[in-house]
Length: 275
Ligand SMILES: C[S@@+](CC[C@H](N)C(=O)[O-])C[C@H]1O[C@@H](n2cnc3c(N)ncnc32)[C@H](O)[C@@H]1O
Picture 1 (cartoon, rainbow, N blue to C red):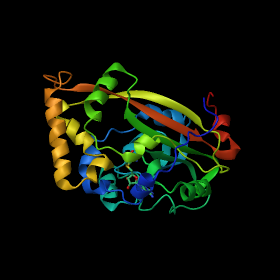
Picture 2: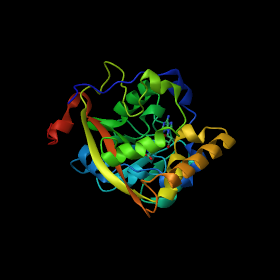
Picture 3: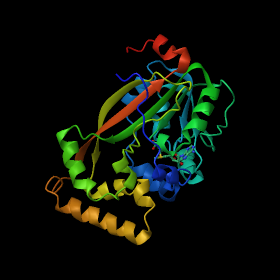
Picture 4: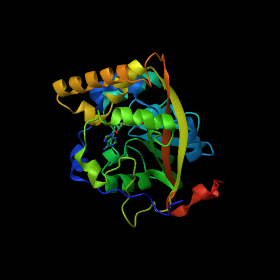
């Protein structure tokens, strides 16, 4: 197990993307098609039930749904009002706050856990870490999750091969950019994460794979004609792929990479997690 958070360089493209999240434009489709983090990942991060848990950068609430099983009070923080509106409709018992990671609308030392699912790469990490440390109780948990196709499995590898030539190319990928990596400022409060990859799977209709791909920022931010061309290409490619032909649904394997850290107090370990 690595002794420090995995690091990723901040590329110019990553910086350009920050503050330009366009997912609100496809809020309903995002809610419907984007793979959610699995419950098993949230259970791993929070082996004991907590009083209050924050879903930071909550989107339409995929993580909040899992957190409801592990926290008495779930607070969702989301800056985009269109995504937040979907969350509010779907999860009326979640306390929803419109806000950003760099300036959290929460009091000092007021929550037990802050979890971030598939959104770490959107944050100004230095400011966000300072804010997360401020709002956590001493020994409270910072947890990050990144859910993606599990390419270690044979089926995941086949699906990846079918899709990868079609996704828009991010120039910074070749420079080592990995959104699943979590970069924390050196010398900050969170330095000794526990890390795990948890497996899960979902059943998807092949005809819906283009909709899933359409929920990723690199596709949403394409000019409309280019986006439509790409999604039509994905539909054609899926329709012609022997792995999908004649199948009502296919099982898609996912892997969720989780990092959990209780900061210098180390209470996560004290709370009984096996290391
Ligand atoms: C890929 S979505 C992830 C949504 C959700 N957590 C999930 O797992 O489906 C990224 C989310 O980060 C949010 N976001 C972007 N910049 C943010 C910031 N600076 N502070 C808080 N949230 C932010 C976006 O509005 C969007 O909801």
